[in-house]
Length: 352
Image: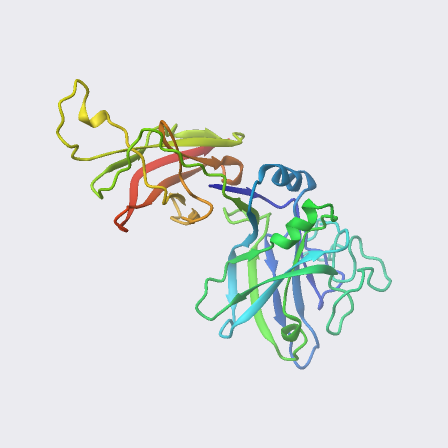
């Protein structure tokens, strides 16, 4: 029931056609192959870096079985009619972001470029073991991960990078990720595929992030009985409406009771009897304004826990954008096999 997000400290695109150009402050990351038969190679790759402190925090937070995903959000895409594969690889050289933009004139050369890991110098590429088509340079990497896309797939990236993150947890130097198309596509004369993603400098709510997921749920009902009726009343009982963005995590409690309780002789109200959700119950978060699903229902990582007082789940607040409103949804699968999704407009805001 744990999903923790961190955001990059640096990113930049590098261009074989403009091999000395730095784009560290661009709002867009490019991962494209725009080769033609006249001007040679025009390959565009992107680098993304997360801080060592955040990686260490992730290492200490996660428990048990876990997975890590690099997520990027498409701003523009062209010529995606065929299946393709994006590589998300572990960078093996130290690099610096720089302060350039693609449109700078004259171009800035104070950070990473196709030729160099930092400020450009008029020598051969100083990337270690660079991989290239025609123009030497373009980064260096070791562990290779990937995500494949078919014609009808969503084009946002959600690549499983668990092997790379595990390398960092085990002491490998953290120089971030490099995103590129497959070598077969990059090396083909006349290849054309264009993908633009929002960078960490975007003014939107779609910066890249590294998301680590693990299951730390616990299910112990005590003396509580489970609901097993789709006419039950399920709601978040302790929604504070506003949560400070500096809060590490917040535990939401979920109440459940019968809509029509069985008549019994008692001195207390039938409607005060709290029950619990079945073990196959999950939570999800939506951005209220955009209606984007920020955290989707997941059978492994958004399980709702239970103790003797009822159900609960934890949300790590640092991975949510401040000054935004979020809605909680609950999904439960009854013992009968029926799936019930509850949307009670349980909304909270992350404040600065």
